[in-house]
Length: 261
View 1: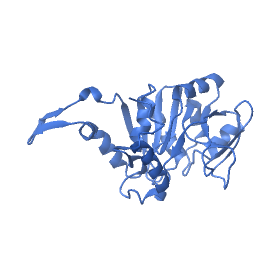
View 2 (view 1 turned 180 degrees about the vertical axis):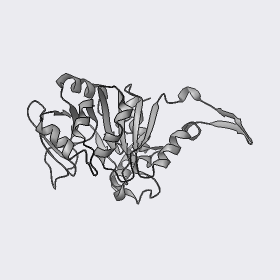
View 3 (view 1 turned 90 degrees about the horizontal axis):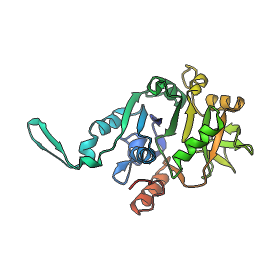
View 4 (view 1 turned 180 degrees about the horizontal axis):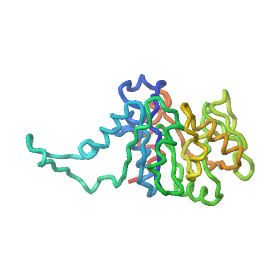
């Protein structure tokens, strides 16, 4: 099952951390937050990724093109490119990564629609944002999605309210979706979606299509959006304060999202 990660936003509220980097490439410890997200999925057995690029996408491309050299020791003889030898190759990531240019100014719905060809014939794929970390049990999330037979599952979390609020009934059916309310007392959208390929029927070819607006509300209208209720750790990196929190957890050896050795 492929994992689609939205990596194209400009991250204007966190430019004071690193103005020359796209937000998914801002480091937590020695690695970009995007790497942490991918490691989290891969540790659960999901290692096929489609990255939706936009703002400064070349930085993300350069990271993966040069990944072995950036993350391993190596030796070479200058003037002899065929002499390159990477050490510690047993520690390489077994990832298949597709880097898709989805437009500098495209919105989230546009980006998802544009990578349909990379989903191939798969009936189901996952989707998340390139700036959010969680200790969610991903295999359990997938099992929940497969159990209800609806088009989409969104992970509902309980952080401070400033994101898309989810209201669900006793059977975990989403009955209302409000994007970024002024205040919220319930669960919010934490990303970590599981989607049937029928989701593309909800993604018209329209400029400015925001995934969290028309498409999700259409799913709610059709009773096709379920929420997987997650009560554990979830934190996005939206501001400098969020960055400092995630960095302190990682540097202190207390990162809840680390599910790999």
